Amino acid sequence: MEENIFQYGFIIKGLLGAIFASITAGLAGTYIVTRKMVFLSGGITHASFGGIGIGYFAGFNPIAGAAIFGILSALGVEYLSVKQKIREDSAIGILWAFGMAVGIIFIYLTPGYTPNLMGYLFGSILTVTNADIIALGILSAVLILYFLVFYRTILYISFDEEFARTYSSYVNIIKYLTTSLIALTIVLNIRMAGVVLVISLLTIPPNIAMLFTKVYSRIVVWSVVAAFAGTTGGYAISYLAGIPVGATIIFTLVLFWVTGKVVKKLTAKSTP
Amino acid sequence: MIGMAHLFEITSLSVSYNGSAVLEDVTFKVNENDFVGVIGPNGGGKTTLLKVILGLVKPFKGGISFNSSLVSSKSIGYLPQMQTGDLSFPVTVKDVLLSGLMIRKSFVPAMSSADRNRASEVIEQLGLSEMAQSPLNELSGGQLQRVFLGRAIIGDPKLLLLDEPGNFVDANFENDFYGKLRELNDRMAILMVSHDIGTISSYVKSFACVNKTLHYHPSSEITNEQLLAYGCPIQLITHGDVPHTVLKYHQ
Image (cartoon, each protein chain N blue to C red):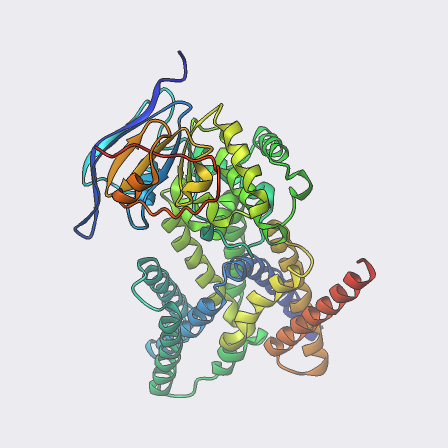
């Protein structure tokens, strides 16, 4: 009986986590994929590992540390690219490695054993707390509201920033705000998929959606659906096969993507 | 006669980037129904002039005043040089046109059904009905150009600024495009930056030569030699009787 309740709670938590991860990853992922910001997002992800290390060392919530590191590095790169003072790809490459280095150093310096480190690197549902789920839920609500209210603004800045500047003086504010939300999305999803794999949770679903639609709002919706199918499918397979969740989710998503490509190719052939 | 009211007036305007003058002591006026070809060498300040009118560049000296009953810096149609939009971005023709209405929207923008109807109307005028829901990367060069023209005119501006529309013009659509502009000129003044003086001379009503300073030629009469003496880039090789346009000396 006790075991059943435990399993029930575990499934509810996993399902809620999958829903919120899919919503946040679908919205944020569509933005970064269509704006060609995948590499930047990879940089943010790895930079945030520095925050995880400092969190361990100083004894506060590592995800809070990651959030601070992630948002600051995102704003930093966005700011530098607006000012056009740097080569953006080099800056991201430096940031990427620097964050990992800081993380490793501080985790090494932390006295005692660091049990959940693998969870942060590769993701694990076991390390996901109720607080993590609630945080992801709040972020989902914020992102949905944000994209509903500013849909046109975001769409047009992404498509043609220079033209947007001719009618709006809010272009930079919107860009910083959106990038911060992307950073938060990445960091909160680290619990699910891990530092190494989280970027694919954001990038694969929109690429699956874009095989079948070229309309932004539909890409968002189908990304969320694809991400949900990938995460729940990944959970199920990982549970049945006893293999790590994060890696299984990514593997499942890539499988969907390849299948989608094949289906598209076949249907394109049958309807010339 | 209606149609002679001025839309804006630039007085003794100077603009400089990093201390070096781009525009110097420019005085210039555009009336309703004008169709001005803005010509001059690269780096002569043509695009800067447009940006001053749009309010994107602040003058160092002098300024611009709009006839506020007709136009403001927020109600100008603008067709920038092609390379600004990301053509692989998932956005439909109709959505691109609707972005031309963003200038009237508040911080929280929403498109009404009237806006959507207006977009469909312009799409039809430009002969793009069949591709209203198509993504941009499925369009030809000429179709793209009409989409961006549509974005500039959807708000029915009194003033239309075009920056090198010839840059991405598909030769097949060139006449079509300039014909469209002539139609629009019945309803709005047009200011067109171009270095393709040969093509535009048969469409524009007057010329503004911009090379740091601005010289305005109210109508179209000059000799080729005179233009060359000023330094406007012009390459004209013709055979036989070719209709031509020649502007007067700059004083």
